[in-house]
Amino acid sequence: MKKIIYVTIFCLSMFDFGLSDFIPINTDCVVHAERPTPPYAKWGKIAVEKTKEKYPDAQVVDYLHVGREDKGSNSVEKFKLWLKGTDKEFGVFVDVEYNEASEQLIKISYKEVAT
Image (tube, rainbow, N blue to C red):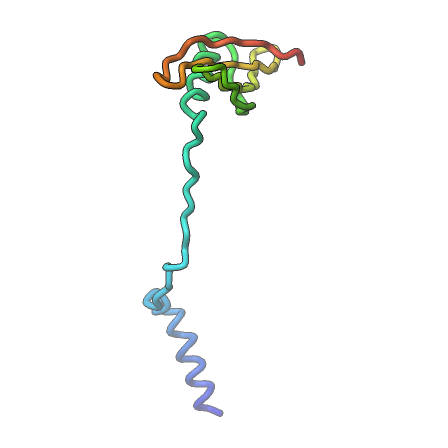
């Protein structure tokens, strides 16, 4: 019985002296998943930048990709941004039209949403 107590005390004291740092931990099972960049990300960044230029006194507090519309050789990425100004909060629908082949920006349109 004394032997069991001594072995137990020895094992516990091993952890108290920091020897537990030498116990190897298997990290092979850790998986770091990365999300792929969505195809609309480039146009979302442009939508946010241009909206900040159009509404310099407001801060963009939220961003939503609404969808995509094909118009022949052109495409329109649709976003909804939520802005907070000094005296109000409001939404803005931003449509970014671009040529799909050349990825050249054609136009950006804005439509404020009533709160």
